[in-house]
Length: 272
Image (cartoon, rainbow, N blue to C red; front, side, top):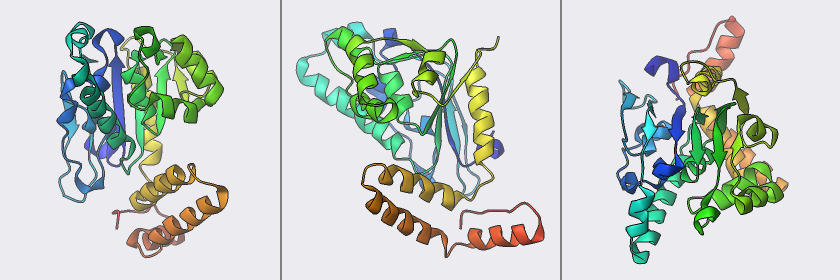
């Protein structure tokens, strides 16, 4: 798994509203270190259930981790017992953790094979790309509980599917399946679920393998350029692109890419 996934964060999860989703778990404060500027999307999550990981052999290598199993976060009955003074801190921890994942420098993919509601969907929205099974269920349903999405949902959903549609989904607390999620642009790919229940994960894995051959530095600055450029006007965005491009010019990987092209072979990038 380490060799296959080196430079990407791959989030594989089944989220349940009844468990309040992993993104709102009180354990969110405990986060593993992000070494070498790259870690998996799921590395920012608490270790709920079984955790599978691949550790880098060298400090500068990229690593990946993903979580499997059901994510059993905060119990809504326990939330009901929480004092109002505790709620703000609780949600702030969830928001901070999801923001940390959104700011990972490497590409991240969310694979949704089950249910991603509330904080679960906010977690997926923090990833660069989302893949879901056709049977998956997704939604920001907080208004049903007389609250609103508090870990980025009101900001990331409009930026993903547009303001009007985002308002409709949040106001109605509607749950959509994989097909509808694809039609409104919430996810990039929808696949039929398989007997093992991991169709989205397998599709995400195939997508990740398309990304892996590319230069690590280029991947990081490309993500940076896109993310920062989307928040500004075009002229400023082009300046950001220029600055990001400049970071690739002195790298050994750029020279390796040119040599590999000239010699008609696959490049061997080291992230230098």
